[in-house]
Length: 280
Ligand code: RET
Image (cartoon, rainbow, N blue to C red; front, top):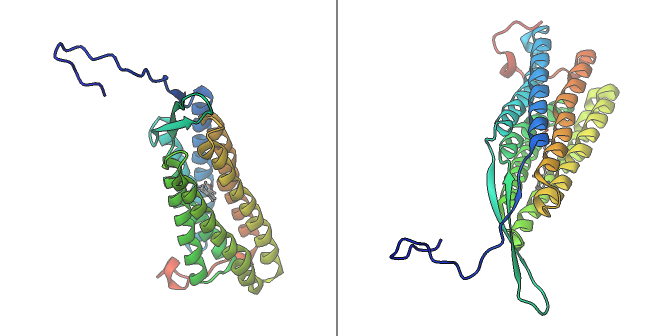
């Protein structure tokens, strides 16, 4: 900041900086955020209503899945009302051969509320899948902790200094953590589900395959939007909106409908889930 001169008039800066490029949400982005908020709210209501039709003992998947959409609804409410967002100042230095370097500045909104959402909902999604497959606590814990590392290092990457190795270093760490998640589902989840018979096995293969396909799109969107800054804030919102609706309400509906039809998908957590309640 220029220091005030004794006359109280700020000195004229010697280098007039370019005015920064603003990458901010516009009307279509905000509308999209509200639409997804409503979708998440309605799905939470529907999943809760469906849970009431079954005894507490059988509500595990309903409860976990409802928590996923409630968390997303809260995070979308924050983003739609302009909270859970901060403005990131990005300095880009362009090097030229015969003329001095030029400096370019971007001010871009980063919706960090997304990462708070993901830190809660992606472990819950893995819990759904892990319980469905009958994965053991060891493998499920590794998957969930790797998933948390993925989200947090992804957050650090989003705020990382542009053009430094650190930013893509964080991204690389996040991708490795994601590979651990994929490994746990594809190898240990698939091995565990065999014990549940043919019906559950083939359902798990489909829904876990669907999940891995969708999840893999997130780091790709991130690469274009938060990585390369090639996609604007609205584009980023719309891309994540589509993925989030597929990964949460659609995933949840598919899981709950199939669970209601397939008795073999019932989960027994011993006394933990419905301690003291009569078994049906
Ligand atoms: C980031 C960037 C760093 C590298 C990787 C990522 C993966 C994110 C994923 C998010 C999934 C979110 C879901 C949300 C709600 O339904 C953090 C984008 C690997 C896989 C499923």
